[in-house]
Length: 33
Image 1 (tube, rainbow, N blue to C red):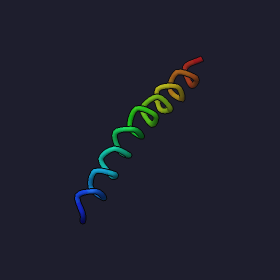
Image 2 (cartoon, one colour):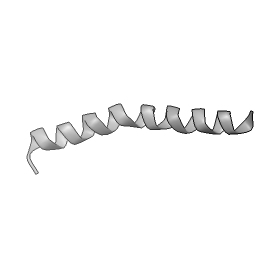
Image 3 (cartoon, helix red, strand yellow):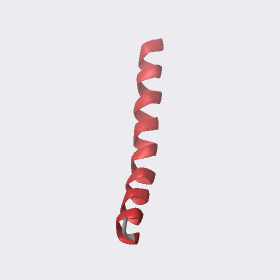
Image 4 (tube, rainbow, N blue to C red):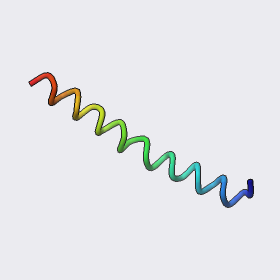
């Protein structure tokens, strides 16, 4: 794997993680109501 591809994967993961966490938190919050 090239360095550029590795950097792309890392950046994508970092950008996706907070979004996935927010979706999970929002779903658990709605399920409590």
